[in-house]
Image (tube, rainbow, N blue to C red; front, side, top):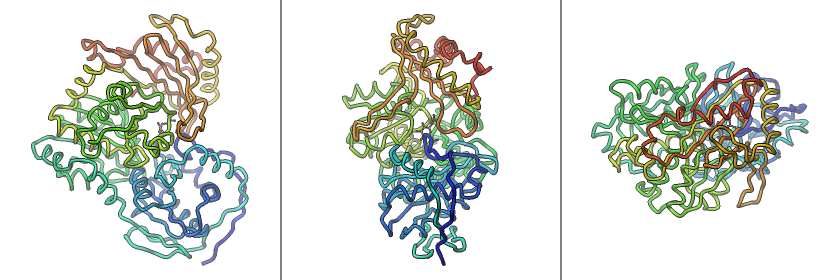
Amino acid sequence: MTVRTVSTTPFADQKPGTSGLRKKVIAFQKPHYLENFVQSIFDSIGAPAGSTLTVGGDGRYYNREAIQIILKMAAANGFGRVLVGQGGILSTPAASCVIRKYQTFGGIVLSASHNPGGPDGDFGIKYNIGNGGPAPEKVTEAIFDRSKTITAYRILEAVDVGLDVVGETPLGGMVVQVIDPVSDYADLMETLFDFGAIRALLAGGFRLKFDAMHAVTGPYAKEIIEQRLGAPVGSVMNGVPLTDFGNGHPDPNLTYAHELVEIVYGDNAPDFGAASDGDGDRNMILGRGFFVTPSDSLAVLAANATRVPGYKAGLAGIARSMPTSAAADRVAAALGIPCYETPTGWKFFGNLMDAGRVTLCGEESFGTGSDHVREKDGLWAVLFWLNVLAVRDQSVEAIVREHWAKFGRNVYSRHDYEGLPLEAANELMKHVHDSFPSLPGSQLGSYQVQFCDDFSYTDPVDGSVSTGQGVRIGFTDGSRVVLRLSGTGTEGATLRIYLEAYEPDVSRHHLDAQVALAELIGLALQVTELKARTGRDQPTVIT
Ligand code: G16
């Protein structure tokens, strides 16, 4: 087998976004496109010869083809061993688990997360460092810089490696080790949660539905929820991963997980509903006829953490992304532990967890996780909730309402405007920036603007600075509107408007968030001039 050095020219668009490089499948299928990016990774990370790499993906269209290319390039670039999930499958949190457990140098995760798949859908690739977490910005910037100057890549000329049977296959001077993608992860979950208590809850008639959305968590959920915890077969729905997610949009929210939502809000509803996304790192939590916002979910888990074996010693701290509501801050204050506010992107939590400053992290974008791995973790959040439910013996809704009664309610919603023309979206953001000098002190309806700024973050561990992380408009009563352009879309621009108001009055906790936030929503439209600038005044997705 010979190593071929292939001449190439750079692509200008290989800048990783919020979570790696995400593009249409057809972009990745262009000659040399994937290879250029993979070589840029290998050239930037400085892996010593003979290092071990973890590779896996969410099983979407082009996963297998991409893995074969990566394996042959890894062999040609001096890696000694690659751990690959059987069938090319590894959920994002499972990849993080494997990198940590086997101390591999790093990992390549193939996924476009919650974005649709299939030949016309999206594909993605990201590099995770040795702590199991997404590469921090200094690494992604080095990869991007390299992609702009690349002139050649190295690849082994070899036949494809079988990925469907657990075992080892030599590939040039490297070994490809196909591993069971589920067992390491499932074993880790057993160390964190009281499986006996959850089994007893389920045996006592508590009913649940988990929607794997035909994405990667199917095999994980079946093994953990149906096999190890004994939930009846069928508790996991859409549990067979499909390359196009059954033509669905594997995003666990009220819009895209509508099949589950109809069950949980319908007659004879189960006690608990949950869903996860394309690569298994997101989660949505539902009680019977009741939606838990991701921001509230983080706060409730934090407040109940010591009831769960893996967290019974207490939390070192909590971190949340800036647009996530301040519900977790209130819990942190009550517990006397720090709460960090980071930019959007799980990569910003890694340093805090490595330094032992935080135990739980969460984002409004349906991400919750802890320092058990360095990615957000959908099934982990589901098991955490089940463990809390088993201990407290109350409904999801009762637990959340009790939480609000104690801490007050951070009423929260996010409005997404997807597929906006890039130029109009950029102009809109510029217009808001231009309004910064005139906004503070102004009265907008019953709200007075206290401040507006562009969020920037200085990492307290390594001092790195990230600027331009979203516009915040804060009002004197503590309410706020946050505006960001998404860094994960692949078509046009997605404007995210995050709305938050604090409501201490229990008699108003029953209000629907859209009703409670109606005035703020109107103000956001007014300040952005959204309709005039984009022709739109109705969001594509409300969460
Ligand atoms: C990724 C990141 C998250 C981020 C989310 C949304 O999640 O890991 O940290 O909150 O994207 O980002 P944006 O608002 O820029 O679209 P995932 O699940 O897509 O990998």
